[in-house]
Image (tube, rainbow, N blue to C red; front, side, top):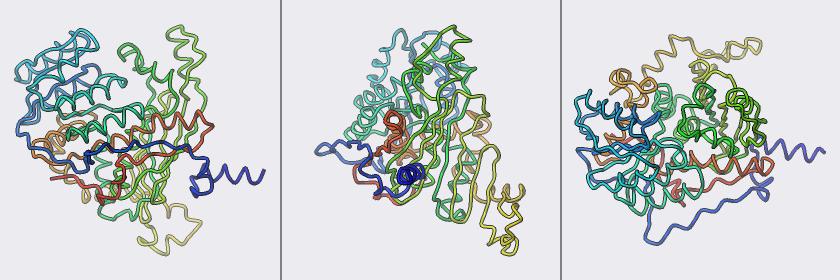
Length: 458
């Protein structure tokens, strides 16, 4: 019993890999095809004018089109959706903003293929349902377009490798539209980390905790609820994982090695379906709450959580634990710095628990102003005016267009997409195998230590 308890404890705490390495479920990274090279820090020809086509105009697409009208050097060429009313509504947005109407494509779920084939398009912006993201992205790159895909951009390992290989083959950008890395607190904290204020970051936490009861019926053809019913695991990990991976320089000096996932039984969504729709569902796959622990090559740990069922306040958690400081966004924003450096005698009083608390609010504000990320400093006022989750959506779109116009590497590459999305299939494997550890492949296929540190091109 003692031996079993020790092994389980080591598993839960992500202890020494060698203790149970023989039990890790392996994942296969396909050999890179001959003549194909990585797209780390990929640069492409500058596009002074970026011609954009939007596919998917439901909950996210219209806002993206509106934001793009505020970015100089953007032409909106085409609008595509299953329903004609959506393309018409978005064209009205363009007219009100003084833009010419875009060409409309609508009518069925395959009409997007006409859009990716258009000769007068540089960038395909995908905001459809999850199951079509990767298919559209792969074809868009084959048709000679850069592609930006809403989260999550891929749902299976085959889709992930398909996006990677196509990007490497075509030398086209494939970026996941992860807006949370551009939130002001996350950007500022990233700058603090890069300036050494928090010391070495050894642990990070992130989450997507958001009760979706008011929104379930808004998803076209019930696609989001259906996916949760049919799949188990963290099906929406990128909001929480993305900012943590950036702060930890994942595939820029470190890499994700393996994960372990556990979940709680599903209750709330089953009750919702029975009470709101009269459906008596017995085989709902996804859990009420899913927790995933990740270990990195450099011996660091990450905790990611997912819960769209319970009546909890919205939270992405976002915590970074460093050797000299700590950052926390939810439920309150705060920073804690090495108290011994601030006041050695105060820190030595073990009965004074306030010795380990956040810095005062005025100090926090001063720190956030001092370490405000250059990207945010340049366009903060405009971003807050244009909006999109408080402005982070606009910063995301602005940076995408800016880098394409200048021929610079994008802030996020296809390997970020892969690492942040792989939790979807890999957590399901872990859960279906009694929370067994599952290997996370090196999506760069040997290049994870080639670039040292995350740098946003200027």
